Length: 231
Image (cartoon, rainbow, N blue to C red; front, side, top):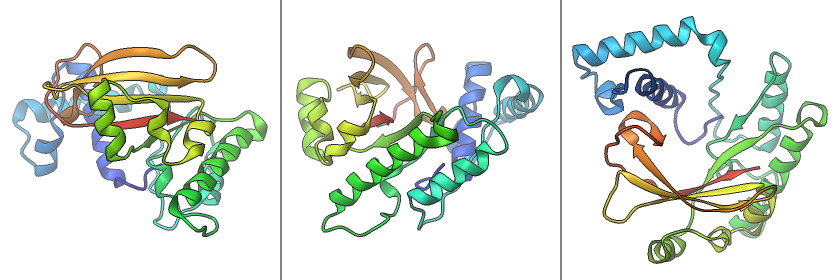
């Protein structure tokens, strides 16, 4: 579910990422967006789309849903229930929970965020007759937390202090910080893991031009400083 980036852009990122997995070179998102793919890239794109169609039974079902600008938690809950009626929802990615409209106005924006996080946790825990569904969502930090993380080399739980419920409601919090002096490397840390151990540090490569964050594929520069919450 996306309310920050349009559905067509998310789809391009997924296809580009899959092309990178298949070919090791992928399809550059900027060139694709501008209509400037060279013949070799265009052939990789066609092959990737063909692979996704032929092997969709192996890969599973992915639904990209554009949330309306006034969507609340109730809209998300109803959408999940509608999808569940057609197929089992294994995971929900929401980009981004902090852009949902509050169900009721509060005195401050952060109080509204607290309410939203409490409500979304109730929705995903009760989904599918109480079986629940994991939810992943990005969570931005303020500049002070970012500056502190650059000095210390990692984020901490205090980075979530803008809203108390961000730390309380998440089962897992993963921080991602760009390495100083190398925009192709990210430093990841599991700063909260309700059912396991915290991970001090995880070195990742990134290639935003092909929608990739992970290990094992050469990367090109991009900047990405955020937190990921799993509820």
